[in-house]
Image (cartoon, rainbow over all chains, first blue to last red; front, side, top):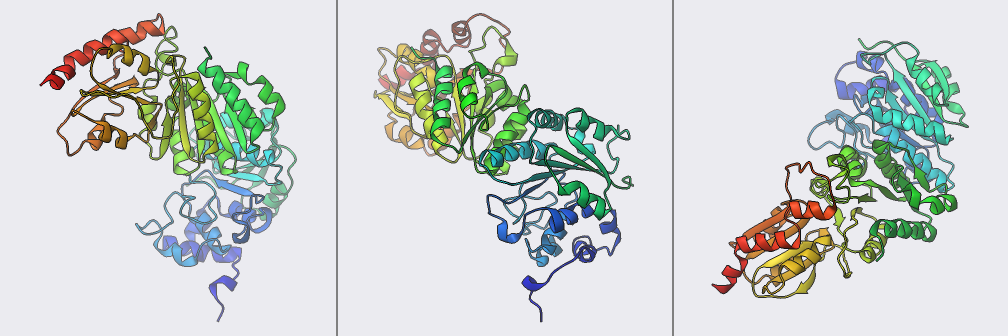
Length: 229
Length: 301
């Protein structure tokens, strides 16, 4: 018998892990806009694992768009940060897993989020802080396209461009859910402020990997996924 | 006499020199005082521009990376404009930091309501576990900033131009006994001490000085109380500490007079002294209020 610790999960296990939370077989996983980005980050990009959780030199992932965190919890479970058994009673009174994640309750969760427009400004401070300590860490923050409505993001986008922070990456998961969205607007905003800007198919792991792999200046990856239905 | 705000800036610069984990984040305001520190420590002194939401969360993000941030602008923009960032960036993440708000209720008397923050302490006080420092002298600003930065908790330091003529030792959550009397107990917060001492001249009352008002020193108030009459004199929203007096004296029938800045907008300019007088927080106003409260009559009875 294989112990839980020894089990390795793959991308194909994520629908089953998510179904422990949603009770629905396949549909929710497929429809979750952040699933592929999260998997590629944790599987191939980030220097972040249960073993390096407290290492000052680890990479940081900030899930700013805290809504709909099932894919995040599924990936954290698959990668061994949290027990799979936690998934079944999520959002219950005694569960550490809420509808918005809390860093003080969930191992591996780097920021508590839920209110939109906080993750990127926090990530700017962390990117400055790790650089000031001479640490070789990347800070990757995931926001939604509608989250960019919040003006606090634009304060951050401007400052990061001006300072040229080399260790900060923003992934915008763009399902065109902003009421006033216009094609290409997200990319134009970041490019205007001097960010290295990549638009990719947010379901295509090879494209995500390629865009996320290298970093030598402020980088945004706009991961386009199907429009929110 | 030293100026509290420049003393803050000079002390912050020294702390940056002494400790590589200290960072300073500001939003244009007070930039004229930070030039040398910024040249010496460009990686740890960050001006975010006129962006206060970013200011506070950059401070919190630095703390998440293991740094000890000092975060500074006028209190109105630091606490009132960016309050959700304080609530979520610091308290909800559960990270530490030192917020330094300048201006208080009266420094910007000629600027109008936009630059005045009489609600700052009350707002921070809606959150748990913040130490609130209210230094009433430039020398206390230096003591307090050092104590705050050398700790690892959440600290709000209220720096205002008005000063008492004498500095006292300020310790976290501790009041200082200035004089002992047999009548009411007057708690003077920050720069309210000088007008309070003038107001109670010739009156047989106890005066406690609060250079740190959260945690609220219930032990001192309780142990030094003679008659159960308490007068709070706070240089911000009236009644901000009233609930703590009531908690302290929950089993003692008591009377409380809460002096401070009312909710009503003054809509006047002029000097800080004009504003203190208009709010009844000069010596004459405080004396008149204490007379009305009848502290002396209670003592005589």
